[in-house]
Image 1: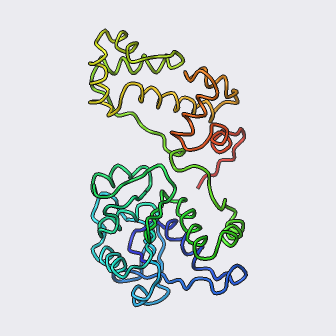
Image 2 (image 1 turned 90 degrees about the vertical axis):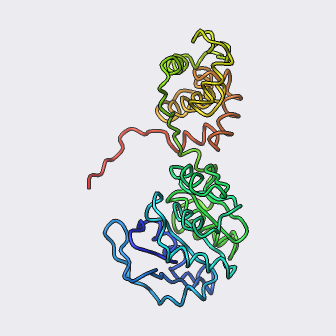
Image 3 (image 1 turned 30 degrees about the horizontal axis):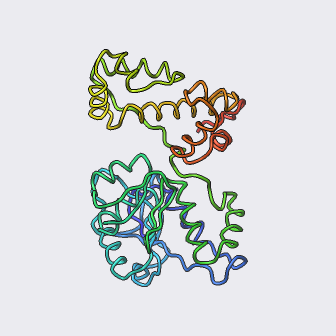
Length: 318
């Protein structure tokens, strides 16, 4: 694993825990794992940890798999030395795994050109903007494209590392390791279920008023014609303004708002699925389930089990 200053500690700790702890009871041999500082060590990981190297830099040249746990800052160019390490590893044809924002390092090295890849949903748009040759998929927990694996944000690094174990040692070993880590061997859905899209600010007065009105009437079977009539403009004008201001059609915007409203009800109430479907404008449970699963990646019931607020939660101050 190649690390540099200011990488976040969690993303660096995940590969250490999965690959760096000898587990002869699961598979023998396990992995020979090294933490290699790029640049002058020791490496200081955020927030406030110092990580001495386990071995020396020559391990980067002999590794079968290179792990890049994260990128220090997605808005800045990654360290040139780290990019060169990744580029050389790619040229040698070894397997490369990035966690969360580590995809930015791989992209800077040209490893992701023409490939499907993922990163934390918060950074997906930035990855696409900076590296347009990368086919960014922000809906999944991890992507394997040939010998390159990229994972979504933070905890999704566990999913990606378990996938590596599954490929190397089989599903039974990966499942037993997941049991010992007290984590699912494979999580349903992708990171879309964790993504709360934020509507862009709308500076157009009549469109902002229309969006506010539509948000209060999601239970109605609204059409583009209904929106045009409410705003007293043509259907074509509504479609053009939605495309220009929001980057989507009116009907897609309505669907996203209905799904988001359903998420809120699933998170905060015990209302039955049929009630939520009607209140959010889906008509019936079947329509809600179909659209919800397509956009969020899991069923409404699975989403509720994961995100429903429980009373009496313990609050911890630090």
